Length: 106
Ligand code: FES
Image (tube, rainbow, N blue to C red):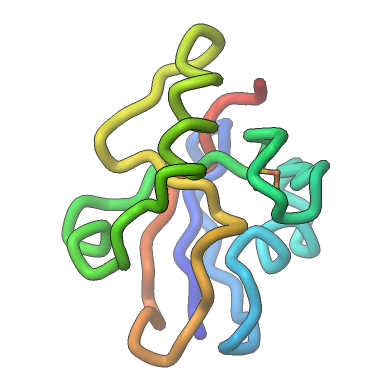
């Protein structure tokens, strides 16, 4: 799947990653300085991204745990309606071309 990424400094970069992997791993491995510290356990919030609205509409709804983690980091960084934990998004061919923005560090 292709991922169109806006970095924290505003630069745009497109990367490719295998379908079936979490978006977090693809971003972490491509050195966007996105940590994914908890490895996808929804307990760190360091994989936070903003999804472009059109793509956000195509994603499965957030779980209660994901929503709670996003609320927990809302004191530290801007959390938007399009905020997601990238560890909870599985890449697929249907999501190829997805546009994401790396959120500020927590
Ligand atoms: Fe920790 Fe996603 S990697 S919440």
